Image (cartoon, rainbow, N blue to C red; front, side, top):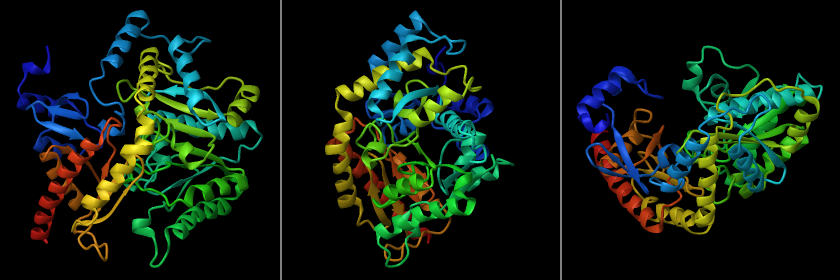
Amino acid sequence: MTYRNFSLNQLQEMDAAHHLHPFTDHEDLRAAGSRIISRANGPFVYDTEGREILDGMAGLWCVNVGYGRDELAEVAHEQMKELPYYNSFFRCSTPTPVLLSQRLAEIAPANINQVFYGSSGSEANDTALRLVRHYWALEGKPEKNRIISRNWAYHGSTVAATSLGGMGAMHGQLYGAVPNIDHVMPPYAFELREAGESDHDFGLRAAKAVEDAILEAGPENVAAFIGEPVMGAGGVKIPPESYWPEIDRICKKYDVLLMLDEVITGYGRTGAWFAAERLGLQPDTITTAKALTSGYQPLSALLVGDRIAETLVKKGGEFFHGYTYSGHPVACAVALKNLEIIEREGLVERVRTDTGPYLAETLQARLGGHGIVGEVRSFGLMAAIEIVADKETRKRFPGEGAAASCVRDHAIDGGMMMRAVGDTMILSPPLIWTRETIDMACDRIETALNRAEAELRKGG
């Protein structure tokens, strides 16, 4: 039995009857009916009605090598036949996580040589939180367990990962967050920069919020600062260039560990294997997932710096933590082949020297002057378009998020998959996009903006 045995209406009815979707108003979805994506190829996805949609989100920030890669399907098939599963417990291992760990150590910052596997970025951030706190306890400082994070940060949706994140709506449904996690202002200049304040000075002020939180808690009580190099699900918030060097300085000054969440930015999206390289950072942990397998298999890898790893090995005894699917042999085989494809096709360099700069130039030239665009910004192959009612004052349209949702709906209707976060439209396309694909995307986004503006102005 396949989906082809059913009509779209039948699939939607079964979906509504039995399938609880993530991050969804289920009553609203069931009234409207879900969009059923049935196949994909290259940079495009297709629904059950055969409509072709240019995927501007790489699935969910993850399909870096694009869709329809036979090599990834074949290596999964071969591994399934040879060894579909075995665990990493009880002093056992399997070949593919061994080889993948070696490869990740090669491309990671020089201070990182150890890897812990899970199945999602949320799991990886849970592990990072637990490992960082455990590190300080092993060093005789169990009171050094407070984590500094940021408002609007996204680090996953498990209880611990949601607690690390700074999404108010998610916190409201926790009914009790993991304690000792503080949140400070994010480096979101479009909304938070003061009149007359330069980007450089704003970046320093945003970093000072972290220092102030450390001092308020007492450096002796602060374990780590966690941050996404570019805040992804919070709306592609790109820090000023002054921000991360100052964060690095602050962490070193107060002996606070640096945890980078590169679940979105890892594996080429910023024009480097990891954004840490572009930012000149050597973090103590790097959380990765998503593009590690280009989404073809669920897999996460927490990259662990030597400082933490050496203490864990020498002083830790048994680390009572792990998952059934840690180092899953099929997922690791797919990851190895995926990294090979990224390297072989020069996708990291392409983003850094060609498509990343071209995306920035083209978005600004084509869309920066649009009547409802307050700002266009990008970093590698990540981009954001701020939707405003007034370009000069940056005043938003009524109804929080309604304007961006209007743009999104027009974009999808016009064959362009984009995401709305608040009043911001965001892009995170597959790394296989070319200049021609970028031009196509800009054509479709511009049309969506025009149609949305006509609707929004009429409604206002």
